[in-house]
Length: 363
Image (cartoon, rainbow, N blue to C red; front, side):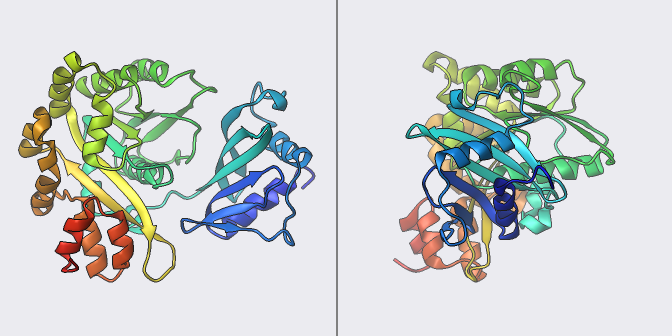
């Protein structure tokens, strides 16, 4: 192709090697993250790009993004990029040491299904809710966006619904030939902020609103309000446990507001799903580990009393048969016992390592 550049070759190579990320920095070796580990590309294959070449790569990637003609003025920028019939990419451009870097997250064109992701049956049940608030949590790179996409894809396949998503930037694309439809709005391109997008969504006849990342008081308030008015609201949170997710939400509010927020959460929260990706025992990729908190009468009671939040992990484990809930350590134990994950890897990712060792008789 006439407009094909070196960066396209690198993105294509990352996709072919099943990398999750491509990392490029001025005067540094090109690297890819494969199965969670950073792999350095030999300079014999790809030379270290100088400043001029990195700027040329950015110019190529950003050529269709509005208001980005002056690359030297960019401090950081997020946008999406596509290689036709290959994959989509979430691109992050950054200044580093007064030079430039590029981090590209590979987004497959095909949205994986529940079985492919090895998600438990409770995720299918969570996706059947008609109203309330569902929080998807995990660290950066934990796969929560992929799980959320799988949930939305499942919903529009089986239900005639209108879903409005707020994304920064848009990642997965959804089929337009399903029972339901997804209206995707990108921050900075279609809407200026999450709060504006949430206000707009209330006038866009949605059944489901995907609120993006909730990180401040205003967006949390708007997400709660939408869940209280008969909509199903899904949002992401950067936290690593179910309790940590609730703490992150509460920290956005003053102490004199927190009782009221706990009351609203106890009524409207449907589930918190937190996930990690850890290496499989056979070395062939990574496997998802989930903590799933389902709001039931016991959990509702605990939410209202922060002094009893420490009891929530045990309640999740005790509700596994009836509700499908589970703690991280409970799921890790299952993966070790089924010979899918090394014990040492599971121990390193356990929420309570000493208790986890005792579970498996390794004190």
